[in-house]
Image 1 (cartoon, rainbow over the protein chains, first blue to last red):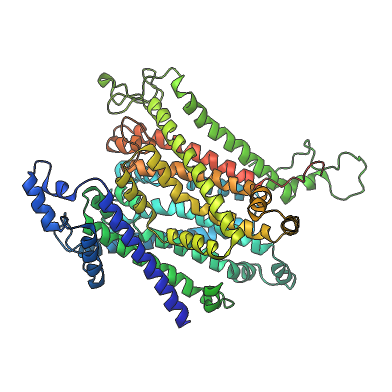
Image 2: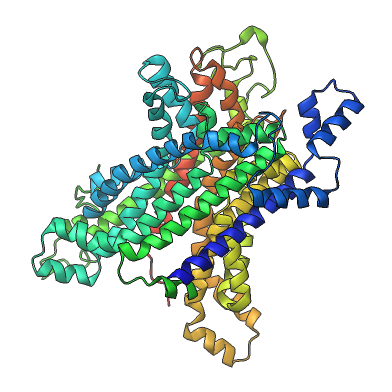
Length: 311
Length: 310
């Protein structure tokens, strides 16, 4: 068990390291000069050179990478160009907003999608189920930025019940959460239905039913017990992906999270900020993945983690 | 829904051939059976999916032939006209450009990118996935690690980064979407090849002295390609959505190309006064993506027919 965790941690950290290194090289290969976007288009050559020197961009790529590695181990990725503050601090200030949004979206998804999927699996191929099925297809076909703008128009402009942008009150959380959840509910409920239908058709359930096990127990204990791992994995993976910033939704709702931060950082070529964002979100994603795997034995006593690692 | 109402006029099975059937199963029973309902649902999805898809794709293909104003022709006297005025079916935008024409021409760009992207990602996915499944060993290790690594990466962030790096040109965006999508195809192909590899016909081919690569290409891949193409069809829907999201964020093909994402992001500022500038392009995207998704679903759920004559 300990070995397994250590091994997974090692793998995860390696992934994170390779990711930030790739990003480090990519952004420096990219056209566009941070000095220009910092000093403005009217800056003279000397001013630009000065800015570059100040940012350490006049050094060779290898030297910069060496400095970056040192910074990586001290946990201080340098000053953000546009915020004039330590880049890590800027990201940490934004992180709670993204965490809040991702958590509320995944909770709403779980609360709606699991019962909905079970409902569909219990009456497969009926007219009503078919109707819901088509609705879920529609749900996964809507571009989220469009859904966001439409919800915004209807519920913040035409019928002003919710604030249009930002996170001043808890009401501001509703529209972005719903926007994200629509797609996720569509995907997860279809997945729950698929898993549950397979389990309902399994022989062990027929036997249990013939022994007179209550229908609710059949559904939630027997069939759900065996669907728990894939469903939980799907929810967890989605959550991990959301931590990387629900970029589009954050931009639409002017949500002060990591997603809108990265868009701004990319626009201004704010190297330290890009690196800090990628580092933190990649770390978080890896951690969530690990937690999901560690939870498997709790959901299914047949799972032995050490073995899963070698398989 | 008309699905669970029995339609006795339709032949449901072979029972109509021998009239006095001793079976207790009536036609009505057959029509009510789960399998029949499932088949009908799949048929409905296929038909409606085809209609939705064609409804969008045919005008897009014909956009250059249809009597429409040029997509970039500005008529400042006719700004933000509501739909159905002065021959503008979808109305006009903030610069007096015909919205329908922009949506259709934008669709050409989006569809081209989507199709190319799924072709590339499908090819990469099938090749790498089948190699991983068939050869196993270090090939499998490397490819599987790549798959896992990509799953833990901040995807959209990386896509934005690469587009910022190489410039928002059509080849770059196509490539970026393909890279985002190949893991799904590869994972599926790999798992199917793993199953196929153990079947007797593979051993037979090996005993006959066929080269391993020949076995893979001539015998295994034809057996898995059908299901792989199904996934690719569903990926097309995602590719179109991804492209529109990228261009919404300003990382799509640049002007003068009209793209779905940018038409919507341009219209965002006028949403309170000119609802159609956002609503209608969005509905077109939804219609097409729903169509493609329904098609993919219907093809997957379609009951497997036994091979004729075999």
